[in-house]
Length: 325
Image (cartoon, rainbow, N blue to C red):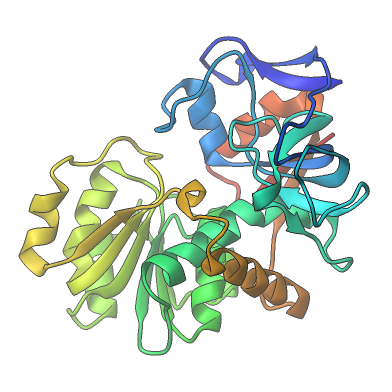
């Protein structure tokens, strides 16, 4: 089979198309004929070598995939060859014609959900859901949510889910133009940080009270400053460090207003918990009903994986990029 392999850490040029042996599913696993692989910021971190969870190199990238079940490993039930699924290969492998995924995290795709959408929604939409429901306890009417990087894939999902639940959303973006889709999807206000002071804008928006929940994927100084605009007993959820490592003494940040802080990794949400299936059901219902939109910004062949990474890192993507196997 063909697969995109990283042999050494570095830039997009390290992504090379190679012939690989077809993987075999072990106990509790399935083999998937890949239709599409989702591209996520975590993929670029793994390629560079700064992903916070350890990886072994050389490796095949990709933690999000859609396709059809090709084979079942020992002990797998509830699925059959030919089922349309989305999955989370925890150790990578989606940038390929075939990949292995754990059966516990498989998502059966309804006929109404295309395989392209099937690879575009899981990580971003479920991360957004679990930040706002599993971690925060459920956003709703009366809540104000700050979404940093609101024009990115996770940001757009947060915006739609929070807006549909009745919460107000104020977002930030560093790239002029990326505010447009967020506003179309229900954000009440988007601060373009290259030309506005986001702390002042957020406090003005909340009449000085601060937001109930803040979601950040920037890290670095942006996360540090975010604590300044969250109300007393409010919550901050971090899902990435796209701009670099933040201030390390989180205790010092949360003490002044008795705030709480979570650094979420979607892989830590146990697939056996009812909350896992609740998230899937909620998101799929939103897609089927049409109020949860999954914008796909580009589709690339396996041989163009490096080009896909360059486009993502250019920071102008307001949606999802996919690889087509």
